[in-house]
Length: 113
Image (cartoon, rainbow, N blue to C red; front, top):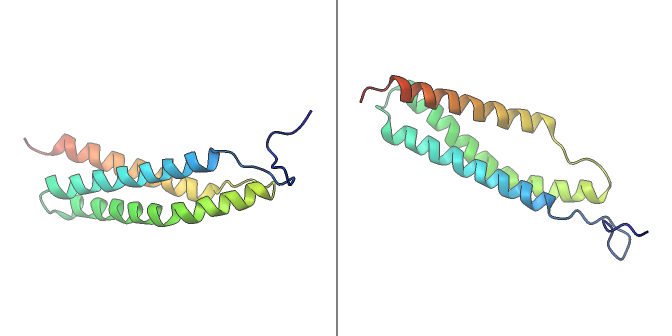
């Protein structure tokens, strides 16, 4: 029985998992940017609206910049038969997503029509 995860030269072939993860990062960055832009557009200019919007835009830019770096790092680690997980980065992105979601929902709930 042959291992289908290896190339002809014996190196590990990572498959499409890394590409799917990179695309997910790009979609997350796009969502951060879109929600943040909507906050800036619909907000009244108060710091309670501008601050999370700016943080969201900065997180979107960071994700865009880090996605390529993470893609290459993950490929390198998989080929070395090591785990490409970055728990701190995952926790940071999750916390940022949760924060932006909660603030956006609260602002929508209290914004007068």
